[in-house]
Amino acid sequence: MKETINQENEKWVCDKCKKKLVSEKVKVKYLDGNFEVELLRCPECKIVFIDEELALGKMLEVEKGLEDK
Ligand SMILES: [Zn+2]
Image 1 (cartoon, rainbow, N blue to C red):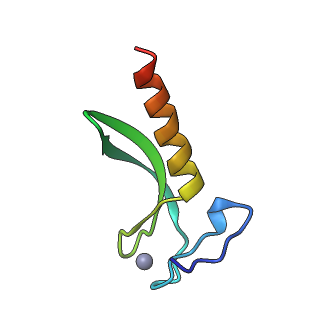
Image 2 (image 1 turned 90 degrees about the vertical axis):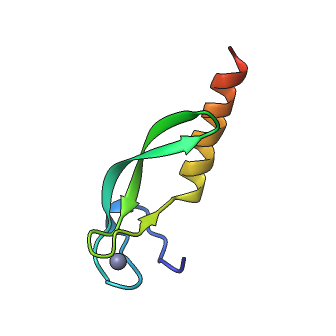
């Protein structure tokens, strides 16, 4: 991933298509559960861009939630 990092997610564009990424809810499988996360996706080639910090944060939250049980 070589996309320019901007303050606002809305300004992210796909490297290949130069299209503005759209925020979309995607179902993610993690451990034994399914989770819905909002990810940035290119409307042209459908590639999904995962903000590493966001993804990590979500996963940590999920792990914490499971430990609390
Ligand atoms: Zn694209």
